[in-house]
Image 1 (cartoon, one colour):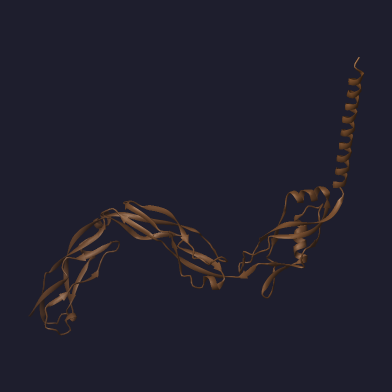
Image 2 (cartoon, helix red, strand yellow):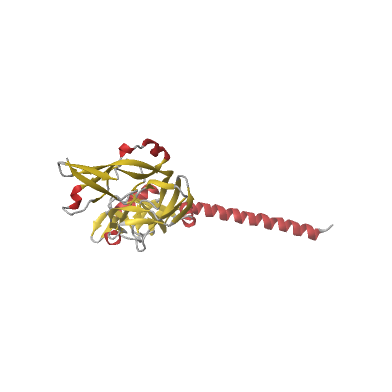
Length: 319
């Protein structure tokens, strides 16, 4: 019989049982201690909300603050593994020139509301919290698109481009935004355009505005494109301010008016929508019988009007 092997096997089992006993004893001691309350200092991450409209949060706001707390070992272990984040309401900030502050009591009160009931906030690493806020100005800036639009032949842009939004609100220190007048979009090119279009464009923000914020960073640009045609209307020329007692003959009596518009609009227009005149007072007493033609009435919704003749002559005879 192998007594040596049997002896070693029994000792091996005893060692394993003893090791397990020690491990369980340690775990029991460890858990017992973790359940006890302790005081320690830990870092909390700060976030800010409810900034008054007249103020703006700067880039140097305090992000981490050391806090003295009392909590169980379990809680403290959790805080070591995961940083606690606290959101501070700065609507009750106080101003002591030239800085803004939250009092210690206000910060402690807000922290206590956000920690669990098993955690007591005892102290902060400062008597008051300086909040990086500054007075801001508001300004409305027009948006100007940089669009290179290349239309197909016989097509044109109807009306103005539609920019949405057509203006942007900027908030920032007066020194940063005082010189701003407008904002440009990034450049865009559309070629061979023959239909309505829509595109998105980013705004270009000037450099050196680290403490300013803008209500929008991009805009929508829309345009309506229509096909146009031209039509010539023969319109009578009317004389004005000729001397009384004379008959006046204008040469020519009619003039061709070239009107550019959409096909639909051209169908609605007639010669009566135009008025072409010559004014005898243009001469100012000069011995001349040539007068410039003037367009004194024209229809709406057209893209261009051109006279085929620039002048008219006249002959006057006594009645």
